Image (cartoon, rainbow, N blue to C red; front, side, top):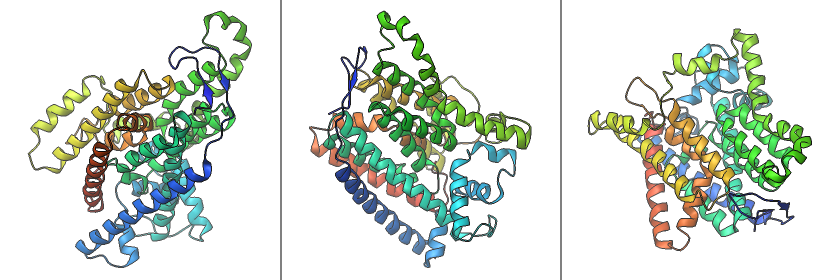
Length: 410
């Protein structure tokens, strides 16, 4: 049962907000159980990886998770923005783990690459709490849009997604997806102040939050009947409310830009560094999948880059297919959100090296509407759902093992 009633999902009319209650206790208990089971699996894989690499004590096992972007978040939390290249990482997550490390009496501590298990543990705690909230948000969104069964099915698919181990790693996937999905959910329920607040926090976590702007504007206008031609002029007085909602994400990004202007005298440094420091260049998104496929073919058959890039490309194509197939059945806000996510994943590939679509598969973890769409498709196909879940968790185990070994599984 939805909370916001619509005369038509794609052709909005006058709507009302229904006060339907979601089964919050069941949602959180189920989410906590799913979270616990998956983390137990990650712990087991970490122990196995530790045995392979000769690591047995808890501290050394924890260090297996200290990979790639995790280094940057720890350094920023310890030393603030020490270099222009660090500015591509937005401030909320490193600020949270720095605050937690400080609360534990560890405001100083070693500087990476020296091991810092307290700061790494703080980073993983923040990330995993975000992951738990993200799981609950997926279940709640499915329950609000259709029923609790859809929410749980979508959450299982979300957890089985091969790159979903990033919800446990010291990355921003968990917190960002939690902020984004709960913002969408509260917007659908007509709770605009907390929806805007969560969008603001999402934008302090990752610039990807710009994909929330159009869905939030659309849903606010739809619920208030602003998109009806016959009432448009009568609603001009409410434009200020619309602008306030639309400003949540730009305000957070603007706040970060103001800091960069003070610190580095360049408010757009994080944009420039994507190109200069991280070799991401603007591209025509429709050509990117073809270029990615061509690059994959040229890589050696058994190379790490070939199979990782293949997984990245397949993840993007799967989300694109689900977007198109679900466009007529799902709220337009979900379509706008997923389309924006796909655009950002494809708009700036890495032009040097073998990892042309690096991080695209990880970014697709945030494609929550796609998991809802896949959940609807598998509703009457339990055997197929079991196969999909088994394959997904199996691939995730392989990807996690490679990540713990230091391979570029991004």
